[in-house]
Image (cartoon, one colour):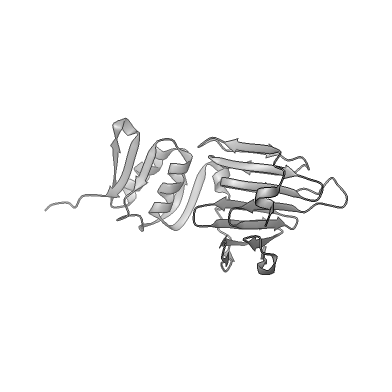
Length: 227
């Protein structure tokens, strides 16, 4: 687990909020960065390593150009993942890392502990943190829709949507804890917060209150109607 601190980080890639971008890796693979994402790249003689500091990425691996082939790994503060010829999505949050496998397979080592490694195959996704890997479950079909600026939700807590909108857009956007548990479903435009907030007001018992000329916005419970 010395990879996190001791690797020779020779490149840094970042994306601005609401501005996803694609990076071509030295081995021919591709790295898609969601908005507000930061990644360090360290390609050495023994491995190819990506460190996801914040945000979300989609990795498309390629055959290594060196012999013997170097493993490709992605590290977050919660552990590391080793690609087994694959295409996979990684999102890091304060509470853990979410990894979803679209093609191939990925080996997760929570906290960098090889003895606790768990293989996740195509069509599965899993959360992990420093303590371990949670049981994998079927892949969310909308897991990579952020590439098109959308978040597809199926009974997602409202607070999580507001958090994603806040990540992708400037200003202050908060959700009242009293309504953060409300489930939402559907497709929500991540880079058009006004549209998403208008959709929320039309479908949920919430209201959007803007302050300081729109620099600070809060989603809260709608006032009860008086008879």
